[in-house]
Length: 328
Image 1: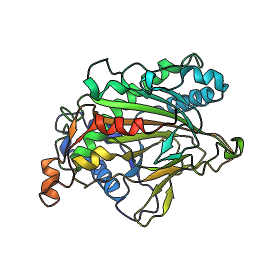
Image 2 (image 1 turned 90 degrees about the horizontal axis):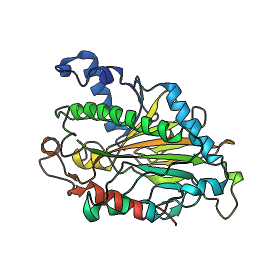
Image 3 (image 1 turned 45 degrees about the vertical axis):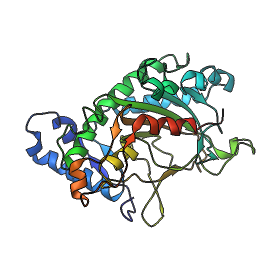
Image 4 (image 1 turned 135 degrees about the horizontal axis):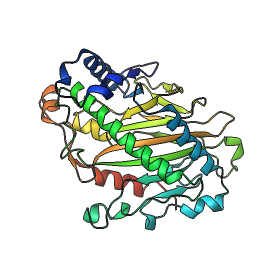
């Protein structure tokens, strides 16, 4: 939340996607332009659209379509994959089960996480151990979403390489002990038309104001329905209006800590005031589950030489949030 931005910037990352893994890429003029734009966007808004990302627009639409198809199923069918503590907090939540800062949200969702083998992280990971729950219908759901998550994991890695360069670090600064084995999760979210919800389930917001937990979020939203709003420094809520073919990206809590506050996540919320059901698919790219995230030395040097944030174990941060996110 760095400025009184009135619109969310758009960054063409095609040069980054094409060149960031190449030797000697740091001197490429087109790539340097992208890095400067990412730096400006992260400092000014903490949010930005990306185009030129290499993900087929048809795939993005198909992911939204199967998500919408699932949410159109009868409740009893959707509840076959319902989220519980015994499922590792993976699966379906009906409208009104999700909570943001103690208030019910008016959306339904499916939560999917990277696989955690039992015992891999000891007590730290036990709450999220297990496999994702996939519906039988639509029949292509699992294959499609597994592939989509794989593609977005690699895209996120490339964007994070650009952000590392923007901070003056080596391109692989977020790899290794910080995010060399990045945890990820995927939320498929449906925001119903308020008038279609019973009075006792109806709330003011589809999702209350919050920041995201990890490094980077990529949002695939409907092309024709506004809903996502981002708060600027003056407290104004700026609409993240759909830009077809783009992802809406935002930075999260772990990047704030790592950058010692050079980049700060921005509060955002969702209202569906349209006459249509709204779908959004958010991919969250995180640090290693057991990473101890702390201000990087080069970022401390840029901000007075003192760490402004305590160390954070990412998995502890995530689990604390998850355990308080639902009415079950």
